[in-house]
Length: 429
Ligand code: ATP
Ligand code: MG
Image (cartoon, rainbow, N blue to C red; front, side, top):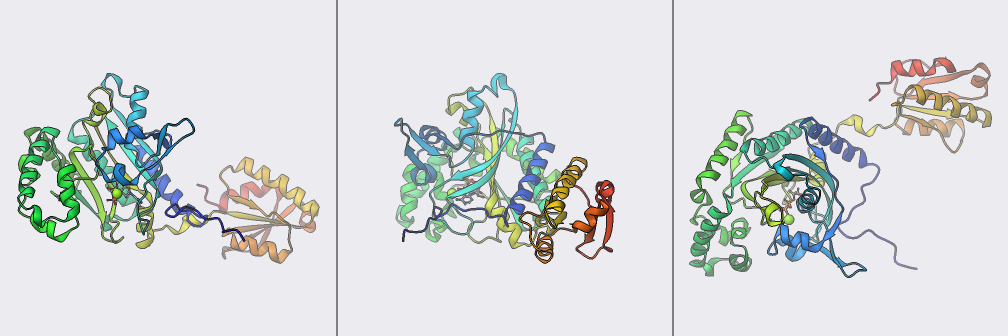
């Protein structure tokens, strides 16, 4: 026997029983972003490898070891996107969306691909919703990004479970000065650093700050602090952001070790973290990347954005039991018909009802079946009401209307009156 076919490890099917929660989450976010004036953009899933190398940075975990890179039939090196910012900036430049310095507030949703070790909250195909804002350089927009996520946590009922961590990485100049001081300090303690940090000290010294190694962490206690190296511009920007978060009543903690994995950040960086998901605790992360667009060949254009991991937020909703009950019921009315003549009449009638009630969730029984079996299906569908059409009803041009969840008596409704009757008892979304 041949080996059974399986999905790739770390790439998951999202099964029918899970999709209502995904759709609830996605539509909640989409509505929120509409309301804040963000416009959706959709980029391809595959891009030239060069795009990610140039934007994310050669010496990052993503580019060094996580990308799905392959040669296509033309011999071009392509990569399944590991994140959305690079492609978004590419699209913005390609189509001149920020030409003449105009602001853009964009968002996207979709799968991302990283070759990581699959575990709870960490997959090889995962999904993000991301926001990117261009040409607005003040802290007001950094604050808006955080404020709207805070509102989202409120809508989802998970505010108590997440914490905002904040830092400023300064400008590339101030970060450069800080790097020199950090390297000097760490080099003097080289023998106490773990192997990975010793390597990073040479390739990407700031990344040493987010080491998980206890010995290295101990060395870092007395290391120079980024906050002491911020230039006035970054300091004022950061103060402006904190003042706005205070004004909006959003609690935050400053985490001076927060550096983020990607090379392109400057000034604000932030993460929303939870302690309810074990090691994979960051549910949303982002920051400012004022130099990225220029680095990618565009005119100087400021940028700020974030991405949230949908799988982790879904896990959090499940863990906290914040899945609204009503989202899994997808049928309002289930129509049972018995015999060929009744089936024909049921089809005509149901289409007429759909004309009149376009939002009615009406499932018509398919595959015939006995009274008992159709009724069982009606009940299992989660419908609030069953409609019953047999030869007797057909002769009188009525249909049986039976509440399935104990709201009232069964009664017969004339064909012509059915839509009006359903309109009174089914709340339409
Ligand atoms: P982590 O530190 O957990 O690896 P990251 O810094 O690599 O995260 P980002 O590139 O900032 O993550 O992506 C933004 C968000 O996308 C993360 O905060 C997380 O919620 C989600 N995410 C990132 N990688 C994965 C993954 N492999 N599986 C599931 N979700 C992920
Ligand atoms: Mg990562």
